[in-house]
Amino acid sequence: MFENLSSRLTRTLDALRGAGRLTEDQVNTAARELRMALLEADVALPVVRDFVEHVKTRAVGVEVTQSLTPGQALLRIVQQELTETLGGTSEPLNLRTQPPAVILMCGLQGSGKTTTTGKLALRLREVDKKKVVVVSCDVYRPAAIEQLRIVAGNVGVDWFESQAGQDPVAIAKAALEYARKQYLDVLIVDTAGRTSIDAAMMQEIAALHAALTPIETLFVVDSMTGQDAAKTAKAFSDTLPLTGVVLTKTDGDARGGAALSVRHVTGKPVKFIGVGEKSGALEVFHPDRIAARILGQGDMLGLIEETARKVDADEAMKLANKLKTKKSFDLADYREQMQQMQKMGGIESLLEKLPGGAKLQAQVQKAQPEREIKRAVAIINSMTRQERRYPDLIKASRKRRIAAGAGLEVQDVNKLMRQFDQTRELMKKMQGGGMAKLMRSLAGKLPPGMMGPR
Image (cartoon, rainbow, N blue to C red; front, side, top):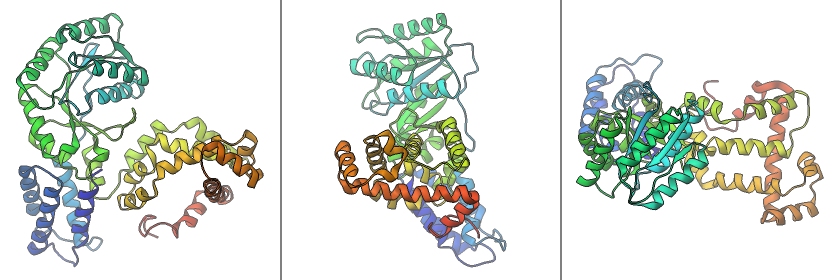
């Protein structure tokens, strides 16, 4: 997410050298680079113009303290302006109303409305502990209704049946009545979309809004459409009293133009971003954290929150207790750790939230870590329980059997065993001297700056 914009902005700020004050020439040079970076990221021109002007006004003449370089001084200003452009502060869903709270989802066809409806329902159920029902008012595409039924089943929320050819308003009213009778907390209404904006679609959504008076009206838009995302959001905002925006497919958006443009153009806050295909891949949009990510500063708070939400605390405690009692780290433990990483969104998702991690993503992508994790899990699943518990039993004949069972080669098993042995050694160091000893052993293996000042 935002890789191109991030790398360009980082290079621009790193290029500033010297001491004293930020000179007008330095700021003008940086401003030109900022402008090019933002335009290449497909940020709307009015947003670029305002952003660069604000940075220039604030930066010229700023004193550079002894503890900062000129690049770091400008970085602070750019980060503050990015945060403001992205909305300043996060704005959570407003559910303060007599239940059921109605959330109306709108957007063009293909923007990810139905998938996002499921992701939001899951978040409301798991994080906010709400009882949720979803309904599809897309009566023109039976496949859309069926898709929502499947999505609702996957995320464990109630689904209200609808059929092609029914009146969308009648469906919505019946779903609202059902939610009231069942004492449900939230009703999420998935609406029909078109490949482009047309009058009939707008009239239908306006009629649904009038019938439901939703507490939240969320516009769902594909972030990879760049400036078009902001233009489409503006068109919907002119017709409906939107309360927020959800940016989808941001994991595939290296530019980031939509995130920077939508708030400025519509005046509506971005409330969530979709960061993957999995049901749990929906994050609250925090402008300050996104600004930090764009500038390569990472998002440690986001990583901590995600870890607390997705990592199985009981399993983590079992492993910690096992290591404390000097019992060896085995292949079943190794598999559990890899599966926990998958729940977290994989290695690339973790790297993105670490300071400086974005620079490592390109290298990691070449290694195809998600494929390697799946292979490793398949290999361990092909082992007997005894082999997982006592890895040293695994010799040549067993390796051939395990490889055949996983549909892989013996060299793949050998590679896994080497990786496991390295991990086991790290775990022994944790047993012998705690985390401090482990971090010292890692210090020489990580890129400069990843361990912080020494």
